[in-house]
Length: 111
Length: 111
DNA sequence: CTTCTTTGCTACTGTATTAGTAGCATCTGT
DNA sequence: ACAGATGCTACTAATACAGTAGCAAAGAAG
Image (cartoon, rainbow over all chains, first blue to last red; front, side, top):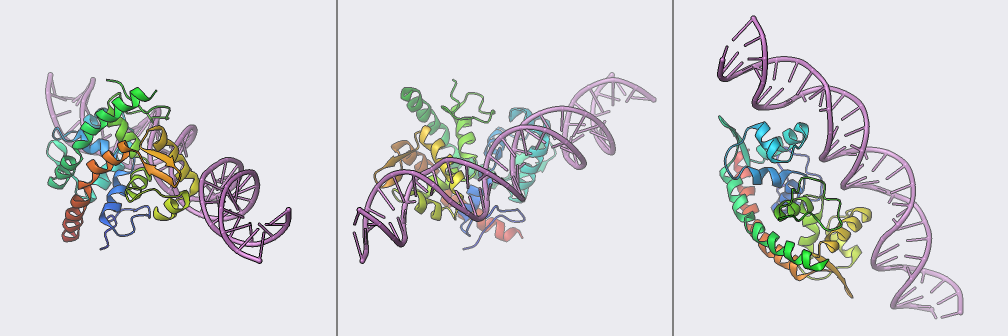
């Protein structure tokens, strides 16, 4: 099976497996955060920028391009939105929220 | 709720929520891949480097430090290993494997 | 005990990615 | 027509990462 990212730099290391391509894509700064913020519905460019803590427009635009060519995000009349694939991804990532709370508790006891 | 990363640079943007800290940590290059490769059991530094497609030792070491202070990875007699927390994280991330296959199929039809 | 590997890193240099700011073209409301 | 708001692009500076070399320590081999 061979699936690096389509039309994307694919910083090496994907070695053909889809899961590696996911790590490559989501391992870029702001990727997951952007998708996460889109869960609530479409967002305009500037609203998304705000939601992501003021990420610089250049980076935001680059990430959005990548996410669009990866068919996780698309543009609609009311701005950027998750595609069905993007929503599925966010659903599989949803348990992370619960885990992160446990993690935070464990860390606070640790210091 | 306030939980940035403990003793880590926390490249801004975490804004206090644990899930954001997760995105910050896992959004760094190789973080997820390293954890992923440790699923199969402990690995020596150099074995891990190999498994991660020859990532440079400097970066690998940095990531491992971060993952250790985040209590996701620990050193054992036989090298680096996931902590219980790290294993839980990998379990919550496991559905990604299935999703990534669907994604790859969707992408291949798309071109 | 000496020598040869292997292992786990650190140091250093060059390249790529991201941050940060400014500003322009287009659209929207008044 | 004018004043904002919006979606970007362009540019520079800072940071992160890649790539290579090599060293100290631990073990194996003779």
